[in-house]
Image (cartoon, rainbow, N blue to C red; front, top):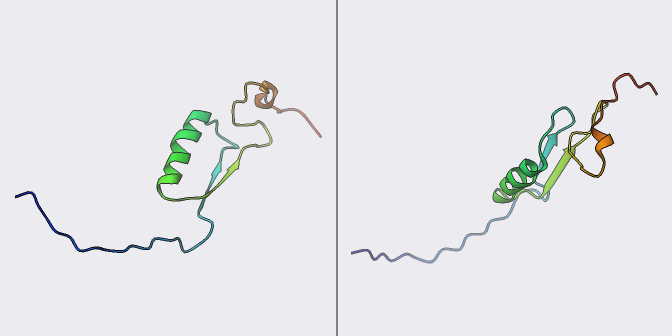
Length: 81
């Protein structure tokens, strides 16, 4: 009881494409960096994704909080080129 015999099995697992990625548009929505780094990147590694493209900026603001550069999160509304 509690014993089983299994035949040996060789599994070859490789992707069909060299790039398996995810593109996230953060330009219009603020996402905390911890959420991005931990949840998204950990999830990507679980499904063997190897490319992350982030769209970080929009005309009006920069969507990731960078403590050393607070001016990036200030609104640019009303500013003309």
